[in-house]
Length: 76
View: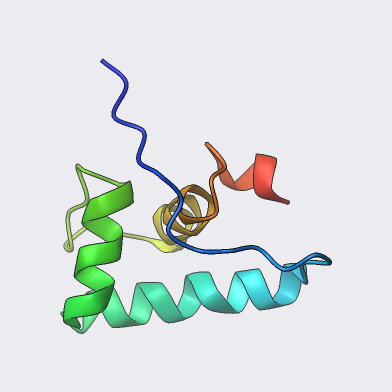
């Protein structure tokens, strides 16, 4: 079953990898702090997310999927 979600972010014409990394770190921190928007974004793009084990690579996956890519390496 394909559980891929639709993109929810718009990528800049010339994306900055450092900015994307910062977005992932900010998402990780916000998710761990139980911020509502972060929880919504994470659960929209990573259905099996668990706050106890959610790590930077998981946040990177969510960011990639939010931009319409299936993985972080494909976004980079």
